[in-house]
Length: 420
Image 1 (cartoon, rainbow, N blue to C red):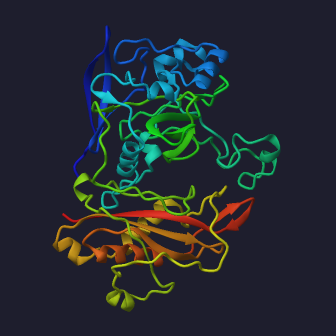
Image 2: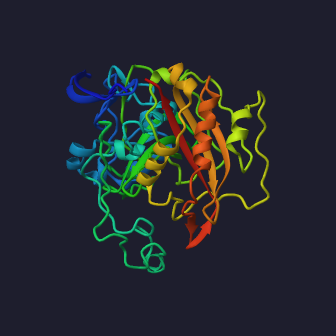
Image 3: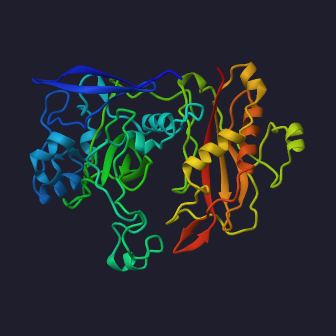
């Protein structure tokens, strides 16, 4: 695969100021590598600075734009940029400099989809968050399960047994930043004016409205390697990262899908390339619980696919304290898939490239069940079958746990197929 990460230096000319800012090309998008740090709108009008808690609350309650530095300390602006409420993001005068805009939720999804998969053939494996987080600046932590919890919760933590560490050394919260995004943990400002989580969380607004009260945003944290999405109060203060283009670009080549239940056990692999994205539909099919190799040879995906029926068991949980894991960890799973994936001959002969997204349940005893294709690869049913087959060949997983007890949980696993 061609290396689609490139770094360049651009000059952004605003009203009365000239600011130098690095950008990075990630897939088909060009992102700034620093958080926004402007105090005027695109037309030159000043954006009010809210230095006091009362000023910040008044702006939020009145739906007025406002910005601040974390802890109202200008020194934080040098590294983390400014924090803005969403009313500043959405102001018609334009928050982003000329030639840029605040990304929509859909544009964040394009970034996440591009970085959230890995290339097995080249043994490149990292999660989206790891690729986006800077290589320094994120605080380390002791126990992933109870760090940040109450003192009482820490005492009863089943992961570290109250020792506050499940490693001889603290875990690093830093990433690899191979994307060049350089995500920093700038923290946020609450609607009441309080500041939280610098060094621990990094938050970025999207230009998309979630509801009359909330707007969509993305965040990274020191504990995990994912890029998270949720909606939160428009009156809160988050960082802003801009993307090239005066207007948001609608994604017309890829559809976003939302599985019924997704947990922190989501697993992302592979880096899709723009040429591969040809699907305009997302369909799903369920396979019999014990699918033999002979049955695979004659199995055909129906034209009309029904939603899988309830298996009669308790529903997989939506949150797990300890995520389900392949025995031996991620690298062991990487090696297993490399060894047992049956790359379809037709995909090689036709130079088919693309992605299959598989979802399955890890049962309480670690068995895999309910294997389902969430995102088939257009024009290659054999690729869909190959991805399902290798999942069904997997040994029992280490089940997810809540309060020390095994629970049923979902795992989502994308596979990339790329013939040369």
